[in-house]
Image (cartoon, rainbow, N blue to C red; front, side, top):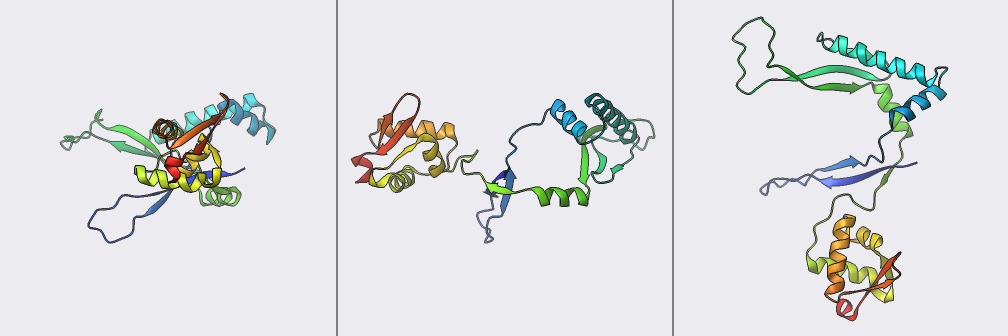
Length: 205
């Protein structure tokens, strides 16, 4: 199985001479349910699914106890948990030592164990996701040039294939392709189950 990713360019100031920095976004395919997670741990150990559920519940309660005391919790092979707190912008404790209700837990920080990162890195096979979740930005002329190159020679393509060539989200691709059909640049063929799109003379000239 592959782990899919997309690459983006971070925005940079107009006056900056440095190249835009690239960063990778991992595409999460699904959320693993608690039931599935428990069953998988059960199969990998001598614990029953009920035992796993009880152990995870106890783990959660124990984490709460220690983190609420301002302690870090280190689980070997997994990582270290600690608290991140926040307060109002106008907060002033006035030097008192009384408990403050204005301080809140913002999040729980997690720093993965180095061995965990190494193991995951060794098992992960990254593959570029062709059909972007975010749409590229093309002018109409750029769209037409991409489509002309894609459909030259009487070739036909599905909407999904055109979305990939244009690097458009499927919703945007559907909207723009329908517009180009109405404007006479594309010809829609096929059945109601699957449509194919071909270039017209207007697009190819």
